[in-house]
Length: 242
Image 1 (spheres, one colour):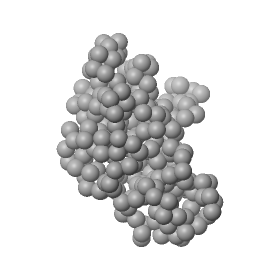
Image 2 (cartoon, rainbow, N blue to C red):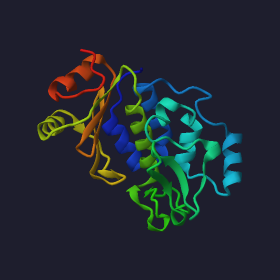
Image 3 (cartoon, rainbow, N blue to C red):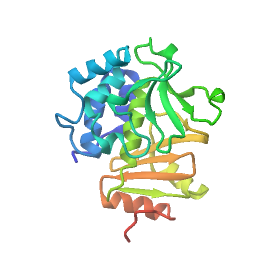
């Protein structure tokens, strides 16, 4: 890992200027996983072939993610994976589906009506037994922020020695979380039917996903950072070796 990344500043910069997403993804990977290398993403010929097959150009933020890290499973394929480029396609209603929930309960995509936008909104859609009852609902906007969230979420769920998960977080634990760690500038957003929404917190050596006030997924850059949150918010941590 490289030196710590100021995630609050980096995220604010991408929100203000979405064209910075490529630099963010490179610095995020270096800081929270390993440096991006040639071959971690798809080549230009593969991207062009996918666009030709699908029949539309890929939105810029999504194209940049595939180009830089589309093959990096540690960054894209641990919980709710990025759709592999050769499987990327339009849904029956013309939406571009780019992510799927790990048990196929929901899909993430860009509605057909939004695909004309340079940095469109990302939407979410449940998979229901009654397909006629399904609909695309707002998720995160713009797409550049949704791509950033995807990479952050898949990274924080990569199960290695630097990962842990607290299954049940109580009100006291949430109070400690809010007091000790900095809230990142991503608005609350839903995942399926979970409410009130997902939130993100961080310090230089800790990345925390608050999953709808029910559990905490955590990635640490150091063992000491992981031990700090385990001690401040005790409970049933799944990967605590102590």
